[in-house]
Image (cartoon, rainbow, N blue to C red; front, side, top):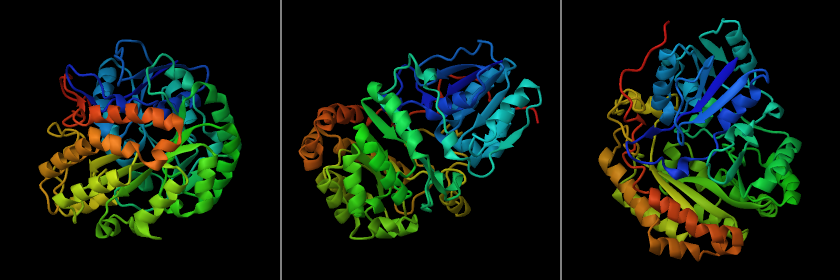
Length: 452
């Protein structure tokens, strides 16, 4: 039996190469490959960087859906289903919108796949594929496996992705993570993480721990950091800002080889933070105190900001960019608020009649960076325009040079050498993302729905 796994792109615009900063290894595809029995042949294609051979024989197509990739995934599913190949979908979007997903697939896997994938494959063998499979509970993370052989020959960014935990306990209303994992957080066994990094270390310039919140369990994270220190690996991760007030945690981060952390600052307005249920960002002296602690331990920051909450005005953008430059952030993102299906934010905006599209991720009128709802104080088009202007100013050459002189950014030779190339890459992408289609613009026809 042969399975074809495809990682869908967000979309394709005619005559343009896919955006480079989006081309990292897709761990969900490698996880499914590892869970698949060894007597099943697996073929993998990445829609972001290669043509998909739709006519190649396959017994099933497997797709992991994200909301931004759902439209392109359904186009790919249509091409395979036209050729008589059954389609199996899973992932975040399939879990958040299972009724929609099952319209375009023979089988939908909701929740985490570890405890149900063997049953899916066995049913496929015997021609008894069910319409819905549900991962019940939370699988033990010692079972996490990744088959990276499927990445051979692909031109991914030189960053190795590793999962050390799943989920987040914070109830941020816009976040699909808290919906998918029901507000839970779990960590992998430390010995499994250490073994994986030791095995991959020789071929990796830097690791990205893709955890939803590396600091979701600070005592457990400290134990992991102590085990990582002897490996002398370079790595980055994402975490909640509350951990920046724990001096022991920060010292262990530095000793363990952490080069930088992605932190969701989201907003400088405390009312916005309370509205999004992220008031903890302002605790213990707020951002200035947390950032002073991170600088003291030479931890670089990738800051993210979102705009479109009810207190945001045009002045909010300037204030955020001024703050990001003054704080010498290594890199930063300035994006509009996105209501993902299944989140409290989506339900709130929908019930208030503020959604501009029934399902923005499938609407032919929607483009990347469009605001799919009506903000309280700004026009949707103004939020889009101001987000692009904020990125352009942050990644201007004067800003790049000024931020490069920040104490933390200069402390590590490896990160200093990569500072200019990384910022130049983001600078080149400022305009490239704007107006990017969801789905392939050249794809024609209607999506083929599955027989009920």
